[in-house]
Image (cartoon, rainbow, N blue to C red):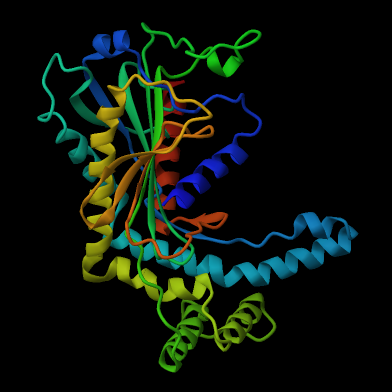
Length: 377
């Protein structure tokens, strides 16, 4: 488990190499907790739904050193290599959206925070007073005096694991942020403004077992590759096209003696959508319960995280699932909920496919916002 947690911290350090070396988490102090008391929760509507991650090949940097011809050749190769993976990832995202629409995701998270209203009592620090949703595409500014909840749902490259990532922030114009850290000179600009409270929470689902390659499985894999390559009329790709070259490459890989992450995902993605998405719904419900519960626990915790901290086991649940608080690095103080049956390191690629219905949702919201602004003028 520590390997996974440290990997998250290492990734965060790499991503934040250009920012000042202070933890991302911003805890409240005792006076702030007392001042907040009953607090409104504003759930940012998730518009992307459950996305499917995949690895996008990009040889542009290497090809650039070979001049214009190298760039053109590299782009052609990338187009062939990325055609099938991107199409298949989009297909999985479309299927996930059918059993778990974005609105259902948002309603589930609202219910999880609503359940916390009954769990607290006035005078017991920060408690949930009410829960509502906000649409950040039309109202991007921070909501004053409310705990904002932003979510991301991502299926791993091999589709064995669902990762739910959440960022919580609280801003209050009447209570400006004051950094708890000391600096040799003036505090960096990032420590002069921003949310009073901030933290991140990551939930990783139970890990599905990877299928064993058998002759029967190979035949199913080949059939799936051919089916994925046909167009909307059911016709196979024409010889010489990128789609044909991509299918040929996939068929060659299917006949070797190992399963790639993309090939594994062909079989495991179906586990998330069968029985009307029963597994997907269960894991998302568990993730939301974890987030809602630990959000309040953390908002009532005053410990200031340190870059040199130590990972802390907070809770062990039935089945071996653990909740840990990251100790070292810029993600110090953040929470990670990991299953007890992790059998392999999980990767999330460098690209994410969004369902067509959710892309349409985003475009429609943006167009409505533009129309409203135009009318207001």
